[in-house]
Every structure is written in structure tokens, then in C-alpha cells.
Picture (tube, rainbow, N blue to C red):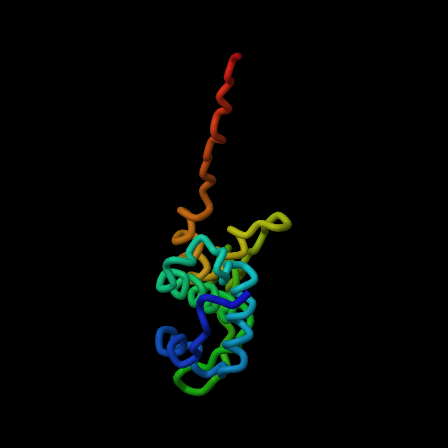
Length: 143
């Protein structure tokens, strides 16, 4: 099936300039991974709203990039962002401990590791709610 949203690296890098240094091939790879989690096909619940779908996929791409990419700071030094919830911190001799405890298959916990994933999770709440549509009742006809 043809995707609805096509990844445009220049647009994504303009929205998230902190990832501009990872390159177009890596960005495309992260977008492809995002499409594994967020349906980017004509059968998507967001098929009629490509702007929202683009925003969600770009958020998810930024989340994946944060998890995997090595970022470069303003001085050209490689930096990895801490992943997970900060469970403890010290100041003298600087110490930070992060924690990631999640049951197998817990998408919410995986997304809560970054600000982009948390924003994606919050924005998709309305699409994760079940909708009950009762089946039509059969009409009995007596002869």
C-alpha cells in the first residue's frame, strides 16, 4: 500500500534542528520505524487528515531518533541524551541514574522515555479509544 505521508528530511530537520546532524539516511530509517508503530496507509484512522498524521509521524521519528542517534552539541561534541525517567541525581562529582521498568509490550512506557514520545502518546489518546458500534437488529416477520 502507498503511504499517505512521505518523509521530507529537510522539513523534519527544520522542525527538530537538534537532529539535523544525523543525516537524511538515518532520518528516513527512523521514519520507516515510526511507520511500524503509527499506520501510514490509506486504512489509517487519520487517512483523511494528512497534516495530523505528518505531525504524529514526525514526533514518533524524533522519539526514535532520541533513543538511537548520537547528537552533537553547539561545540561539536557528541552527546547522548539520557533515556528513561531520572530516578536519582547528585551534584558533587555529577551522577545521574535513569530507570526504565516496563512490562513486555507496554507502548506507553516506551514512549514516555522522551518528550517527543510523551507528546505522541498524549496526542493519540483519541485514536486509542474503542468505539462501540452496535450491529443492526434483525427484524422478525411473522407470517
